[in-house]
Length: 254
Ligand SMILES: NC(=O)c1ccc[n+]([C@@H]2O[C@H](COP(=O)([O-])OP(=O)(O)OC[C@H]3O[C@@H](n4cnc5c(N)ncnc54)[C@H](OP(=O)(O)O)[C@@H]3O)[C@@H](O)[C@H]2O)c1
Image (cartoon, rainbow, N blue to C red; front, side, top):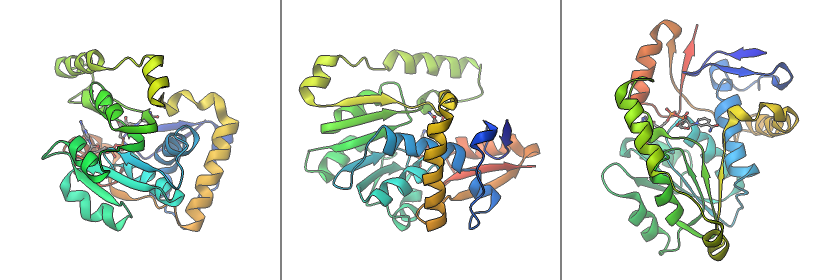
């Protein structure tokens, strides 16, 4: 096993999954590939099946996961919508996001519906969880898919604290149940992604990683590292993320 130092959480990768670092990336930039870009690939390409003639809504598009998905969706040629704090919109436009939505000062759902003539989009990737997944589901147009991959709504403080346990419970209670009949009648699909449970699929992950590395060599995979903190300042790094100051990845270095 090899440990990729780096992100706020360390990533443990089976040895046969370790590829050559692309020359044009720094070690910090390359550290974003095994988690952010691999998860983005599974969400957008493998399970999301996004096509050039489709639209995708990427929630929290200014975070590490958001930017990775934006690179992949833009390369496919799909129309991209993204929610983020407004201070990140100019940066996202420079990265190729077609429509930035400020979800902090007003509800994102009516804004998305206005932008899509009330049709919604074919793919939504949602790391927020809880009742937010119900809302994202409402914004799918026919043949739409909802990819669920996190429950950020439950992360309000240190793990194990009473407030975090309560918000996790609230999030669990708010989660939707998807009945097969409405899915069938509305031509919709839902799926979940947890990269941490995919390590038994090493052969597949290796193929996906090769495509990502090709993208990095060709320049359409462009990891953006917001800032680096030393391991000793890990607490400060977490505070920085919780205050939503980061655009792209925050990396821990020895
Ligand atoms: N399932 C998997 O395999 C997998 C893999 C990797 C990551 N994830 C999950 O994906 C989510 C995003 O990861 P990331 O690496 O993109 O994180 P990140 O780089 O820290 O970015 C997250 C962004 O989300 C927004 N946000 C929304 N709610 C938040 C909250 N309660 N606290 C802090 N930020 C919040 C913030 O931007 P704005 O305010 O601009 O929206 C923030 O910058 C996390 O929940 C993570 O656990 C899942």
